[in-house]
Length: 109
Image (tube, rainbow, N blue to C red; front, side):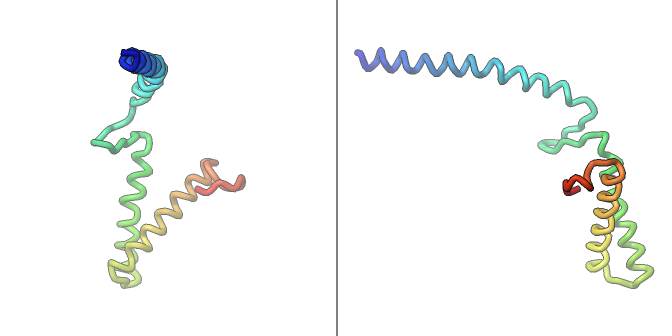
């Protein structure tokens, strides 16, 4: 019987610890829900609406550059597409540098 009593006591202590630990953890989770303004969720993917121009840049700009490379330099699509992605990434890094998000302090954009 002492085993049962000991198991019951040890079993109740962690559950009270879990309840105590669960209460503070629930508060930040509720606070995170307030920050979902301006965010579209599609399954596990979160799209912040403030990032839409950047997403358009990273999707449409490489396709435009690829089309121009195919027409002007007569490159094939499999060669021109990675070049278009590279150019779009460089433009993204330039814009981040111009906004002061990286650069001279050693951070990588």
